[in-house]
Amino acid sequence: MRRTAVFLALVGLLAGLATVQEARAQQPIEIRFGHVGFPSSLFDITANEYAKRVNTALKGRVDVKVFHSSQLGTDEAMVKGIKVGALEMFLPSTIMSTVDTRYGVFEMPYIIVDRAHMKRVAEDPRVKSALFEPLPPKGMRVLAVWENGFRHVTNNVRPIVKPDDLKGIKLRIPGGVWRGKMFRAYGASPSPMPFAEVYSA
Image 1: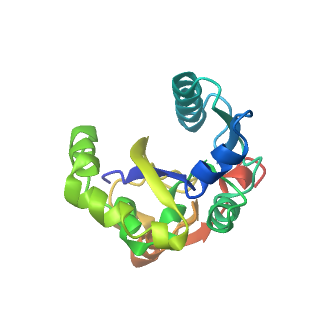
Image 2 (image 1 turned 60 degrees about the horizontal axis):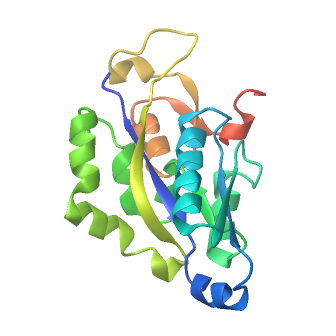
């Protein structure tokens, strides 16, 4: 079956940084940047590249530190941390559809056909407006949208080549709203699981 595109939003809590900067004029502002990916994953490579560029560009005024492998909590915990100001930045996955259902568009099958199409969608001003503007009142701000490849369905029962093949299959899935609904509609039994628990399950 056609693979479902994965989009991840780079989210940061930026409100108040100017005030903090004034109060700590002699010290760099520390920004903790969390994600659930393992070291050397695309999550981690991307987060570290962002940190390197920001730290270089701001020349000691800011110190972005990356925390991989759910060191700062699950996606759910980091969403809460951002909202209450206990965390500055994180790189979430499909959990964003629990913050605003419009992010569920990236969990839907048969919408994104390839990376070129995905790039056009992500960079469309109408899409950015629809996704970025609703979040500041919820205590979050999206800095960018990027893709982390395509989801594949794996199991130990049978190959999945069309939606009907999912009937009766038990699956572990990432958190989010629409992915679970999609798999249930196809007759599967999805069970959400934090990424940090995948290898110990």
